[in-house]
Length: 149
Image (cartoon, rainbow, N blue to C red; front, top):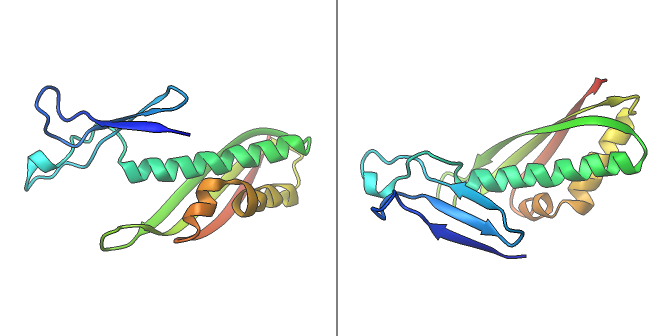
């Protein structure tokens, strides 16, 4: 796996904190920083997610992918899956994640709660590389709700 991240700056000025990542699979992700009122040249323009937001989003995507795949492989009629992530970060640099909570909402027909719980646990404990990696530093908790479709 590979990725190239390039600083874009503000158009033509090479100021600002915008970046574009091009992934090995050929996709592009824009990232930007928050505006810095005290030193505008050091701040972003708030045009894209923060880099740490993309880490959190990637973790949610990785785990939701696992949950859907595990349920489908179990021949469950899964029709939707969302995961809402909330996090806390250290107060000082490096501002690593210290707590992450992942709340899944799974929509489907006749899916036993035990199957959803098992899929989330398998992702968290065995399959989701991102959450397992972040779990080395952060306390990760999970919860879920089901919607009958």
